[in-house]
Image 1 (tube, rainbow, N blue to C red):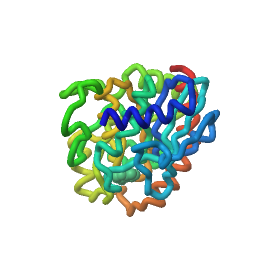
Image 2: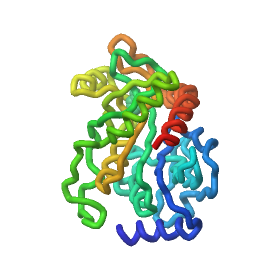
Image 3: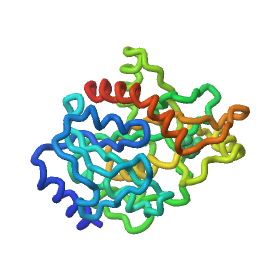
Length: 270
Ligand code: HPA
């Protein structure tokens, strides 16, 4: 594993001699952020040694290197999901590489179904914590002590100081944000009404099929994380309607402008 991470890292480093501050996983709802990055270099995943290649519609696969709000960023345009059949180790491999590239903070976005009765379709939710309901954990198996501890602390999965900054920036700029707990599931089925209810009872505000594996791996390596969900549909009793991938994309695209603005403002402050 370490050899593979080093090979991927060295390949990327051979193409640029600048440092990296932020890692960004451009999930649903942040795809358009690419257009705001002052791009130095775009590397297709398939050229990077050991990188997985993405299959989902709406997720292209490039590693984007450049500058955003004056910060050096390395961004994943297109992410990997457990339901596509990747192992947890495969789909979190790029996060390992980001650490080796020297990133100091990780930003993640996703689309999610909202279980909180106060949420509306199109809302942006700051993730303050998560519940891992994936059937497994990316850290199962041999632990590489060079990467992080066998039993990583998870008391601060999302950086409290960054969350405070996000809330301040949102308030100052009149951007409506919610804050809540993200439940990570494997998918690919959306939830049944009973499952939404269950996830709400156990403390979840939103549910989605990503982010948790990447954040676990980032925290294993002690990278501070912050993440956003775009609420694309509601799993609230009485408001549940049929969901489709297409609808999720349409709602996410509408909210994307606002989330992009928020992220640019936040990065400038960090
Ligand atoms: N459930 C799981 N994943 C999702 C949802 C949902 O309702 N909406 C967008 N991604």
